[in-house]
Image 1: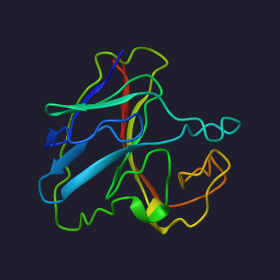
Image 2: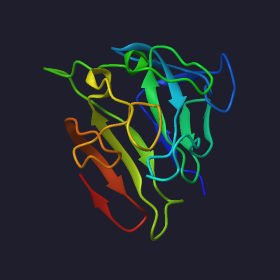
Image 3: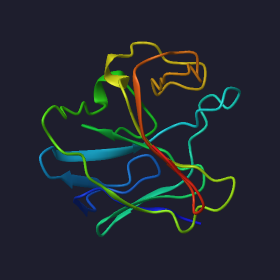
Amino acid sequence: QALRMLVAAFIIRVRSSPTCPGELQVPGLGSVRPSVTQVNTPGDRGKLAGLVEVGGDTLTPHMRGRAYFSDTCMDNAFTNTQYVSLNLLGKTFRYTVDVSGAGCGCNAAMYLVSMPQNTQAGTCGDDYYCDANSVCGVACAEIDIQEASLHAWHS
């Protein structure tokens, strides 16, 4: 089942591909291009994550779907400089999520990581993914905004 995320914004479909599903106008930030990235599972290096759709006012990641906010989106090519850095000091971060399709064993997650500062491609792929637990071999600062399902919520 798909998860629907409304990120306090509206979405305009300008380009559609498996890696670059469209463009998102985020109030206070501007134009963002979600980049569908690689899975973050060691051993699945280079494998694209699941489908992510952009349409209307929603960003919809399907099972195993992963997307990062980017300034530019290139089909199945990644650099650490393409990812958006958020300046949240003195600002509000607001979004709405529908987890009604995320049953037991499913994790609908949203988190902030410092990927633009990461210069190492990890062991999971070439998308410069990093997190506080070094899941793909590269550690960086991480703030968990949401880990949730239909039955549980953690922040």
